[in-house]
Length: 134
Image 1 (spheres, one colour):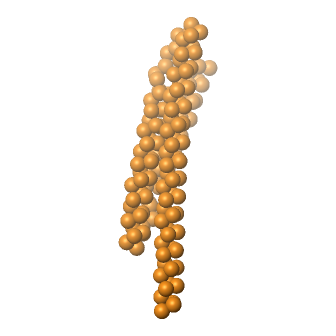
Image 2: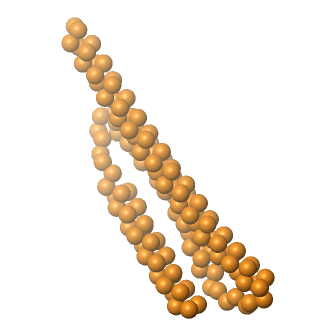
Image 3: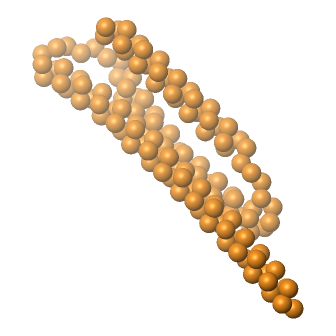
């Protein structure tokens, strides 16, 4: 009888650890999403500030507004990342409760691909801006 009680206690402890790890993972998604939102805001706001500064100095500024669009895209991506984290958290929670856990596959690949594409777009934009201004 004591072995059954110890087994249940160990099982509950493992279950609690699994759920706490799931919550920590979700919070990592939220932190990452929030950082991307703030980064996007900084990109967009910096572009607007630079245009205002140039206009104040009497210099005409011709831009495509690409920075503002990249900033807005980053903000939307950050929000979507938090939503994806919530969906993943709920799915993992249900899997842990049912005892049928499946590791994330597509979600990890999608986040990786989007991050690489966005990073390459930013790098390309910086090179384009430097060449057009310099």
